[in-house]
Length: 362
Image (cartoon, rainbow, N blue to C red):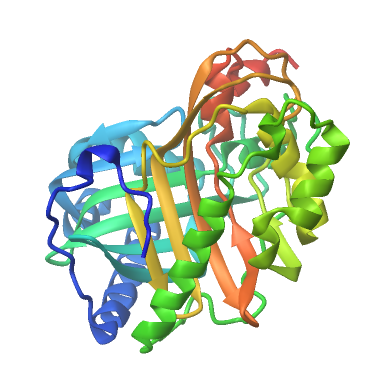
């Protein structure tokens, strides 16, 4: 199977783990319970729970402005302690829990909502004393029943939206809470079919590879021609379900059907980041688990912000990095749903727009 490997890794021998499905099921259940323990622990017991959950030198790659941190002390002080003080009754609600092995690493990944009453400021945003659902997508590399590296994207733009602020341009797609998979098995997927897992991952990867075809780079193409190509002629059409849902980050929004996906995200994105390269940097994770698959990059793409089509800000040709995950549901032989956390606040910060400063100017 062709994968998005880093150039530096190509040609180097890697020991590939063949993870037993029963072990994968145990991993998902174990770390789901541990996450619940952390989220719902008292502030006094938080560090003890983190020591149970994380290796003492664990690395955590997080959303802006937390960014890259290391060790239980920083994980506590920069992520979990501020969250639990802002949302005193915090709990976790999982939409998707999947696991698997990629090369020589084992992962458990989640699409969740951290839910609580917003009683104290977080990230400088004033409290509302109302319910907040923090859209949270997280992927954990595990070893010996502990996490050694985490990737966590909380949709801070959606958090700000729920707190009553909207400091950026209107989304092209629809804003709102992400639903669980249409099949209803996202949290309790007990897959034992290894061939199905491989098939799901292969479908998402081949679809992603097809995105490297760039009609927007043709010198004679107009925007209308590019749009027509992406909807009707582009290879990606072979992989998407007619009733596909693309759940995008706040600031971009959700889209339905290939036409909605192209209009509300893909075409604006392609016109803004024409020189993007999906293959040079590579993924840190590529896993299939039954009818689900997941990939992630840190960073997955580097490209210049070249137009105002995507996010609406004036182009400045600044090179930006993107923190991205993709969770897929494969249903009726095609990709039915795609949950796509992107650290929009981090992209905006790189082009000179700090959303946490903007809310105080409103």
